[in-house]
Structures are given as C-alpha cells and as structure tokens.
Image (cartoon, rainbow over all chains, first blue to last red; front, side, top):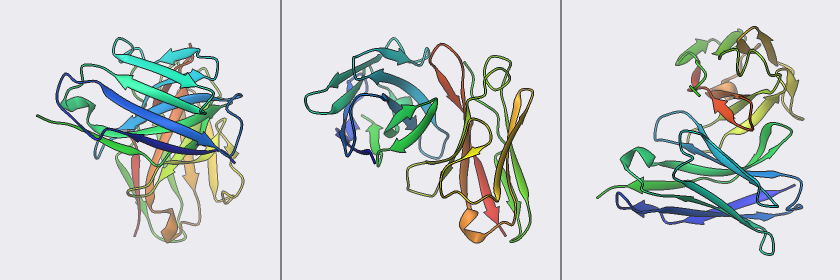
Amino acid sequence: QVQLQQWGAGLLNPSETLSLTCGVSGGPFSGYFWTWIRQPPGKGLEWIGEISHLGTTNYNPSLKSRVTMSVDGSKSQFSLKLSSVTAADTAVYYCATEVSFRFEVWGQGALVTVSS
Amino acid sequence: QSGLTQPGSVSGSPGQSVTISCTGTSTDVGVHKYVSWYQQYPGKAPKIIMYDVDKRLSGVPDRFFGSKSGNTASLTISGLQTEDEADYYCCSYAGSYTWVFGGGTKLTVL
C-alpha cells in the first residue's frame, strides 16, 4: 500500500512562494497521478492539480497561473510550488494519489499559513 | 469551474437513515460516472469511501449507498451509527483532467 509523507514551510509572508514536497513509499512511483488538494480552515476541499511520474501536469484553471508541480522519480517525490501567495491561500495542503478518477491515498496534510 | 453544492449539515438518530446530496452541472456530475465520496474526521485527512457513483471501497459497510440522478449524486447512510459522525465531501471529474469537490456536509448523529 502506497504511503505519502509531506513536508514544507508552514508560515509565509504575502507574495512569497509556497513550497511543499510529498514522498512516496510502499509502492511504485509510476502508475499514478500525484495530486495536490487543499482545505482552508473550516472550509471544503479544492483540487489544485496533478502530475504524472513522467511530468505531465493538469492544473485547476483558477490556480494555473501560479502553480508549478514537479517530480523527482529518483527520490520518489513530487512537489508543489504556489507563487504570490495571499491570506486566501492559507489552508491545509494534502498530497494524494489519483488513480482511476479517484483519490485513494492521502498524505497527513500540512498547514500553510500566510500572514504578515 | 464552480464547486459542487452540498447541504451544510444533516443529522439523524442512531439506526435512522440520512441522505447527503451533491449537485453539480451537466459538465461534471451530470455527464461523468466518476463521482466519489470522502469521509473526514476532525483533524484527519479525508478517506475515500465511495467511487464511480456507487462502488464501495473494501471495508466500507454496505450501510453506505451511492446513487446519481441527472446532475445530482447522493450518499445514503442507513442504520446510522455514532462513528458515522463526520464531514462528507463529494467529488466529480469535470472533464479535461480536472476535478471539482463539494463544500462538504457535517453529519451529526443525535
């Protein structure tokens, strides 16, 4: 069973770039789309985007201009960068696996707070 | 790409049934069979319980039932138990390799 462990900076100033990484263990790095999903405090989930092990990306149109995802197959890791953050980007960010149009395995979540 | 619409909260007594609706549009729920449901306990990551509208993940009790009609998907939980108290989120494939979630429904077991 694939397991995901995520890490990254938890406190950012407005206009900075959010950077998170998710490490994959217990399963193959290929065969999935690696996904990022976020949840503002007390609110619902928002799909941010996904990346394949070959680097093919699909992004939420509302965030596309600020999102960059990358993979490092040699380390079984994938990463999220979100530029020009504002308070509205404060959220718990989850990495997850997407396979067959569903999100089966989730990371533990990482709270990112944007505040001056 | 707007979010799917769910009721903010539903409640029921142990043993009763509740249904959580999830309304989308003809570009997501109405046209794709890829509707999934997630259960989230406070402070925890969401956990998938249903996919492809009506398929339960292994280990999910058959008290959980998924369905879809037109632009609305539904999750029905029968024989409510106290451990069912959680937040529930629907999600639909929206085409062009994008997904959209609902705003979530808080289920209270009275």
